[in-house]
Each structure stands twice: as structure tokens, then as C-alpha cells.
Image (cartoon, rainbow, N blue to C red; front, side):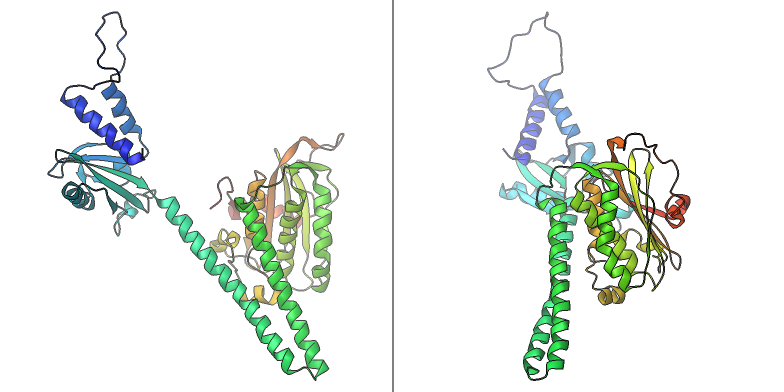
Length: 412
């Protein structure tokens, strides 16, 4: 039985109860004084309707509200004890045809602003119960609508991002064929083809990684990871682009911290942060990596003295394909997925990512991941203050008014 059919059955039972009682399975039971008096079936069914996550409204033949639950008011199906006109019209149609009518009961223009938490999409099914009565069963579809909108945007963005390098490869290959007799031109176009194919490969790899992190594949079992080894590997991956940009990466001393995680994912996330810091820093400016313990979390901070990020972009930088400076991203070969991957890596480790940034000053991205139960290597005291060897990274904790924390308990 569908949810709507179940609700209709409950409403019908309530009507029968109001008219004179219920017929229980096996027939009515004889009354006994010795039996304790509990709630009646009508009362239990009324509780079911009252606590339902769907908005339930019972209408008579005139469209008047006979019964409704609190959820119907929350969803906007009931206003001042009157049913939404769209629900009343659907009820008339259901009475005439005897068929279930689906109606959009989402907020009209301006209504959603009356309540900051009002649902953005409500769908109702209206069914005739006979004798002129109809029941409206309304459900909040906001999450489904948002998910579908996100999916459409993602497909559109991926198509656009893939179209650029694929189109460039086609044009370069054509130019290469036309210049087959010119070694210098062949070398120039071949170099560009290599660059675009590398960019395309990176984009596909990051899309696969992001899909994996968002649940398309099961994540590996978490193991005990040495934070210092993660930092060293990420530093090794970032050394070549840092040298090309004339940027020196300063790293604090070994910490001995341990955490539960997936090493490959954590290295990828930290590498993305370091690469991002390099790409958005001017030639020769410093970048630093620091580690510290904060309560039951290990924090790894990457700080740069780059262009910084405006406050209104602090949350958006973790969105897929969002770029603060699209021109710079194209010049550096950025895909716009790096920080989204960082956010989801932190989420899958039960942690979060923080951002402190000011335009013209620089940025600090901090990954917070729960520490291993053992805490740190035996005999080593946990750090209570940020490492003084990397003062730039301390801005994350000292400038609380500018810190943006990306909540990752439920990822959108």
C-alpha cells in the first residue's frame, strides 16, 4: 500500500471512529471491567496523523477543513484554517473523477519570505474518500528539487569544462596536420596538444575522485596514518610547481601526530591546498604548512601571502567549478574542482575545512580531522599552541572574525 493509500485508510478510520467506532480484526471484543483502559484505536490513528511527516488535510464537499495536522500548516497547505485554493480545486477534481490528483502546493511569490525555513517545493496528492470527503497528502520535495538542480548544474558545468580542452585538441591536431612540413610548428603545436591533453586528463581524474567521495563508490577502510608522512608526500608532489613559480614552501617541525584516515585521499587534499596556494601567490611570495592539535582534532594549515579572497566568496570557493579569478585558473590549468575535493575528503574523515582570508593579505586553509585514539607518538606531549616556526598559519586561530568553517556533516 502506498503512503497516500495508508493515509487515506487512517482518515477513513478516523471518520468511522467519529461516527460510532471501529471494527477491529476478529470482530468487537467484549467489554471487561478488569481490563486496563488504554488509548482507543481512533486515538492511536489520530496520533499517527498528528505526528506524520506529511501534511494531511481532510476536506468536506464544500472545501472546508474537517481535520489537519501541524505539518500541513508548516508546509503551507493550511492558512488561517483554510486550505490552499489549489488544494481545494484539486479536491473538486478528485471528487468528480474519482482519481488521484497531483497538485503543486509550493510557496507562491513572496510567501516563502514569511518564514526563513519555509519549504521551497511542496507536492500534494489529493484522493476522494467518498461521501464528498477528500484527503490531501502533501510532502516536502525541497531536497529532491535542490538535488536535481545540482545535478543539472553539474552536468552543464562538466560539459562546458570538457568542451574547452576537447575543442582545443581538435583545432591543434588540424593545425598540426597543416604544418607537417615545418618542424618548428610541429613542435609548437605538439607542446600545446600535450598541455591540453594533460589538462583534460587532470579534469577527468578529479571528476572520478569527486564522484567517489560523494558516494558513487565505497570508500576504503580508514587506517592509522602518520600526519608527517602525508605532509612530506604532498610537499614532494608540489615541489616542481613551487620551484617553477619561485615560491619557497616553509614546513614546521615533525609532529608525530596520528589520525584515522585514507592516506591517498589526505595527500590529494593537502596537495590541492598547496597547489592552490602556489597558483594564487605572486612570484617569490612564501607558502607555509603547519600542524597542530586542537582538542581531539589534528589540524593541517596551508598559508599563503597571495591575492586573498573576498568574504562573500568564502563559502563558494568550495563549490565545484567555482573560481574567484577565472583568468588565473585558465592560465594555471586549474579545473575548479580542487577545493571541492578537499571539502569532501574532510567530510569523509569526519572533519571539516576552515578558511581565513583577506584580500591583499593572503589565505589560510585548515583541514581538521579527528586524531587517532593514541593521539601522538608515545612520549611526545601534544601541542597546545600553534607552531611558532610558521607564524603565518596562526591567522586561522587568531583572526576568529574572519574564519569561515565549511560544515561537512551533511554535504550538499
